Amino acid sequence: MYKNIFSPESIAEAVEALQTGIPFAIWETFYVTVVATLLALVLGLPLGVLLVAGEKNGVLPLPAWLLSVLNTVINLLRSIPFLILMIMVFPLSRLLIGTTVGTTATIVPLVVAAFPFIARLVEGSLREVDPNIIEAAQSMGATPLQIICKVMIPESVPGLISNVTIALTTILGYSAMSGIIGGGGLGKIAIDYGYYRYKYLVMYIAVILLIILVQVFQSVGTKLSVKSDKRLKG
Amino acid sequence: MIEIKHLSKTFDTAAGQVAALQDVSLSINDGDIYGIIGMSGAGKSTLVRCINMLERPTEGQVIVNGQNLGTLTPAQLRAARRDITMIFQQFNLLMQRNCLQNVCFPMELAGVKKAEAQKRAIELLELVGLPDKAKAYPAQLSGGQQQRVAIARALATDPKVLLCDEATSALDPTTTHQILSLIKEINKKLGITVVIITHQMSVVKEICSHVAILDGGVVAESGLVSTVFSAPKSAAARRLVFPGAVDEKISDPLQEQRVRLVFRDSKITGVPLVARLASEHGIMANVISASTQAISEEVYGSMLLGIPKGQLTEAREFLSAFPNIQYEEVGEHV
Image (cartoon, rainbow over all chains, first blue to last red):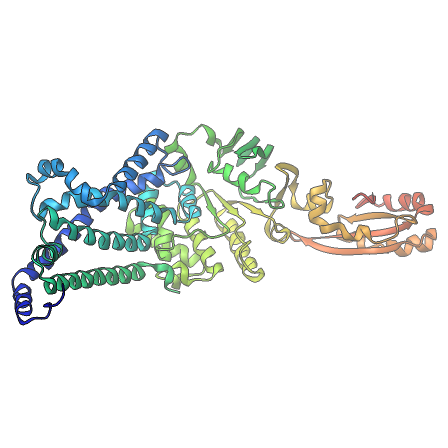
């Protein structure tokens, strides 16, 4: 299978791919991942906040039924395999973007898959805020909204940043899958060349580039998280 | 003025209902430094949380400056809380904000303009002795410094009442002393009523004017520190004033009756009591323990004697005749 992987022809092809398709694919992957993560954050952050603040002893208690509906929806969305979810949200993509194919259209399933994940990650980060600090804010006459915006979220920023980084790298992995439904990016290159045309060298290059992207996201995320944490400036 | 009237608090736990406080009534006058002392589990923290309604009482009322806190709307309660601020054992500073931002925080909540808030925060940091720490983060400060920042933060909204929940329990003795001096200074300078929750007798002795002893959710005794501690009546108070009461276990109870004398007045020490017992009455008293302690600027002493049982009546007559000595026979059961 890999016999001719470094043959002059495949090297020439790889060089061509690197000059033509790949630079744009890197950009597409980057764009889809970042935009999908940001949109998922817009939905997931408030949802995660509700999960913590809305508890019985939280700062903004919600009706128990509402909380269990939210939890069920999150678990439901998280149990659908992404490959199937991509197809299931076609009607939604058509409604929002007007089409189900293309790079931008893949953002829709990515957001649908990622926001429940992000909600859970946000929930985890917010739970780590010292309840005594929240009590202190209550003793100063803070409103529930002030506690959320000025205490819970700012105090968990380092944790939120590292969790968003996890989400970013996961979404990057998912975005590679979207080549199947006509999305662009490095995933599409890897599938097109490697799976459909047996051009393994290009596939490997695409995979290596994906690995590099993950490394870059992760190390930038870790640095930002550490840098933002004022508890470590001892 | 803080009036706590017939306050009870019951918690529902997995093991059933637990009564943390039962029919607690106290009144705390403006400008007092009022200590609430008790062992852990006595209900002190619950009581202090009822004063600002962080904990809703199951029964009873809390009236602060004529305002019944239990009947306020959430918005009114939040406004009332700016007048009743609190400091904590673990300081509870916002770890991601620097000291200046921490002190600004309650003003930010109250909608004070940023420039104005910062100006006041700088003044407050000066008041607590940390003018150079404005830009430092809590993690860079020692426990004592963090508590100073917490005090500055608590003073930011010009409160009438400062609640201290075990505020010195996480600090070493020297730092405890410094923080208590600061609280005393603030009490004198700004006229703020201070309520101190503690399990440390030394804290009450050092700064409190009044004290309530909480034992098993009930006020065992309350009043002026000097009154309560010079002649403790309740078992809980006696445990605090004569900790352990180990001295009462020393002499041979078959031959001697143990007698506790508490001196309410430092002048009485001019009378050589034990010597007079011996020379005038021929009673050979056995001195088991004797101590002197300073309680809020006054000096009190107590002494435990072993009196031969045959001469007990005579000794009782002699010792009870002094007006400033509290005479008490102590049994084995104590």
